[in-house]
Amino acid sequence: MLGCCFTALGVLGWMDASSWHLPFTIGPYAVEIVTDRLSGVFLILLGTVTSCCALFSTDYLRHIKDKINLQLYWFALFLFVGAMAVVLSAGNAVFFLVAWEVMSLSSAALVIAEYRQHKAQRAGMIYLVATRIATALLCAGFLIMFSHSGSWSFSAWQFNEPSTWAAAAFILTGLCIKAGMWPFHIWLPHAHPEAPTPVSALMSGVMVKVAIYAAVRLFLNGNLNCQPLFYVLFVMATISAFWGVLFAINQRELKRLLAYSTVENVGLILLSLSLCLWAKNTNYPAISELALTALLLHCVGHGLFKSLLFLCAGSVDYSANTLELPRLGGLAKNMPVTTATFILGSAAICALPPLNGFVSKWYLYQALFASSMTMHSLVDRGLCLAVVGVLGCVGALAVACFAKATGVAFLGKGRTRPASDAKEVPILMVAAQLILGTACVGMGVASPAVVSILHPLLAPAESTAPSLALLQIVPLLPIGIGISVLTVLIMLVVLAKAPRQYKTWDCGFGSISPRAQVAADSFAQPITRIFTPVLRYNLVIDISGKDKRHFPEKIHVEPSMVSLLETKIYGPAGHWLDLLSIWLARLQAGSIHLYLMYMCISMVVLILLGTQLW
Image (cartoon, rainbow, N blue to C red; front, top):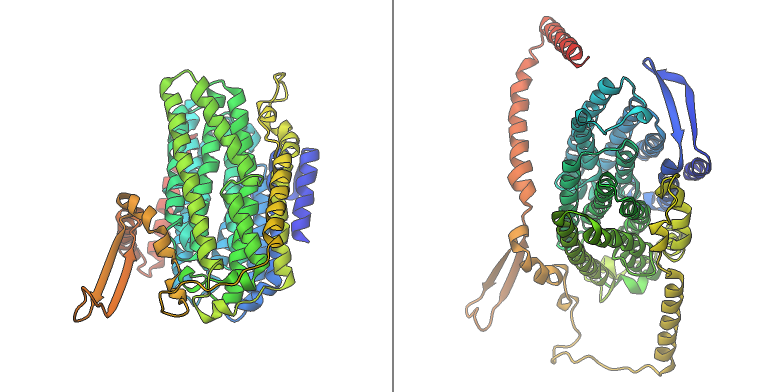
């Protein structure tokens, strides 16, 4: 019901922009709600994903009811979803920050839903630290903009003067942390695997898009023109896309793999945003329109197919009681619908036509190619052309990543008894997957209609030139029909022949063991070895026996991979933070007089800072 309300609110906002002042205030500031075409797109996405997650949760929670507090779960979930809707419709910075904090704290409570597990506690702490830093940066940027404009309303903020660029940098960094872009993505692979599956779907499918929405709302409407900031975002987003997919392909746990894939796709979205702002600032409105089209389509498309993939992962966990790829296999025989929807979601995230992932990447490639051919600076042209090559590598790695996830988890034989005995999930969980899968197909096939609907948001109202986004539409409906007809014909030819029964040659060893199947580590190893300098990949092989050279009795292989960010940057930073916390703990002497002195000093400092700002 709540999801349907958000969808209806988004549709109303798209049809007619509205603004309301609620009959209460936050301090002296009015609470302003604004819905328009931009917020309408994200509200519709929120309503769709929320409805599917609600359907899925009904039966899924029976699987984990002994591990979590259901009352706390539902309370935090309603707060989380409601706060996201408020963030998407907040008209001023004060109301935005209050809703942002509720969204952050309620999602942190959901991450540690299984609070008895040490991993969940650690993930929750990492996520809380990330959200605190993000909120602090947002507050700094908002305060600077308030001192510059004298208003908390977003509509009054303009970032077209050098004095506002510091505020833009603070705000953008805080939003990038929340979105999970490299190198601020450290919380994502910890939080998503520990949260309940519907929460992971909402966080990856919608919450990271809320940060993207805020960036589009503030910087595109606020006419940000800081070219160095565009360059930095452009490069970091490209690294995020490559880094995310490279680490995703080396994961052994399904939800952790999907979390790193979110880092990749957030990089693609922010790459589109940086190119959109860059082209707008250098007076290339057609390229800016293409990039904005790619951004909006990929936000919605990723929200749909990533939520679908997380729900499929939850179905696997529900039936096989594990998400570890080395313990799965053979699920396709007993879970055909989940297998089909997972393959569909994998095809969409790999940008295969005629699905929605292909459409958004098509527009991003078109924007990059147009930039590499029309921009005045040779450096800018070369940079855009180089990113095209990087995205080609990212696309190939994404195909390999989800071929591994699909092949190891669903094909072959079950590697454990729970995987072999897995059954299809209840009907409501299946229905949630089918709705999202249908949306992925429909959005791709109907892409001309979708882009036409988005056109008022993409092109300026005063523009009389033909829309380049409309001219670049791919006729995916004929392509989809052609692929479907070809598939049916192939199946008819294959099924027309009488099936042959034969026995696989097994070298005289009898039935082949599931251990002889390609494993997750062995599938990824050739790619991992290529990127060893980045991944710090190491393979330890222990062979034992009297004549271990010719007749080994035992072989143990242990691969290892090191994240340079965690070991070289975040690890030492956490260590120094612990030392600082121990030192600051001495300030808690238990004296009320000392605490009053701290408050007095803080008040004096704040008054002096406020005087300087004004």
